[in-house]
Image (cartoon, rainbow, N blue to C red; front, top):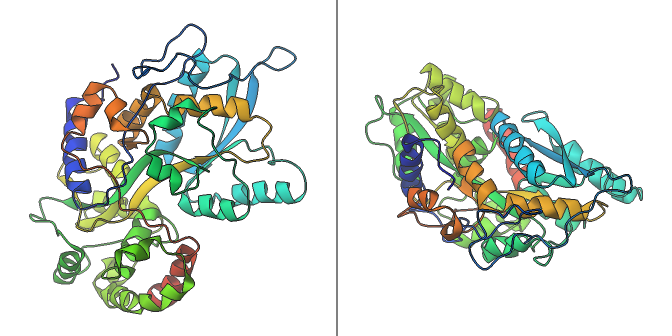
Length: 409
């Protein structure tokens, strides 16, 4: 059985999850199914009629007898690198026929060149540009759909796709795997904030009543700040607006941008917006602010390792800040798909998904009902799903207008 790091981790995750998801949507993103194994080693997750070799045709060694090697490009904070530095060796130990070459692009240095490289290689007739697996957010999933970059994922080749909630796959036309999820929450100093806001209106009132004690990061530099801005813009709009990429909706942002502009003088430093998600966490660590929007996994990790003070607590408003999955995509022109599919099948096993929970404090990308019992227990009473925003390229327009209407004031 795969156990969480400590009882504290389980209790903290349970507390977060209950608060976090109570006001969120109902698309289930949590669960797991039987995993694949290679050779004689059966995966611990093969509990639902699966076989040890559940991943379809295994990749073969190359002509020289060496493992098939593929390139996996991913970006994010250090915790993302730590996650893959744990999962990849686990996979390679039981799958000696495949070697995963990790190419890590640190957060803030820009993942767009990776996407551009895949697109340029396709246009130049040069395959996938040496990129065989790519991790990114929803915007690049949808952009890649338009550019016809991603391979359609086949359950016959990745058996554990059956353990992913069908709605999350349908939402991206089966072009990407939502292998883990997180959500933006309020992180706050409980010594200073006795009763955290329960709604966006209450949060706005708190910000005005506590000048310069709240901060959010520049939305173009991190998802926590982007979530605060986007949630504000879509406040009071019809629920289906958060799944609409029609540019005509931009005219309905005016009220939200005025709210953000009016809040500027109440922000930290009377209008200072830190760079990156960690920028606002650093302000909370130093005590310069009392409340921020933060990614749940980052906040929980830094509470657990002592970076954030032990007085730090987290909560969710209703309706919740947007969050959701991080995706894995396979370039259509990769020539290493068998090896990649073997790896993806392992990533969707309970064994690997347990690492997502314990190492990243994230929500599993597979159905919770098939995870080990102790992890299921840690999520008891939690409503499934996240409030996700799928607005396509409108996110870029939001960032541009925020710079001119809010940051530049």
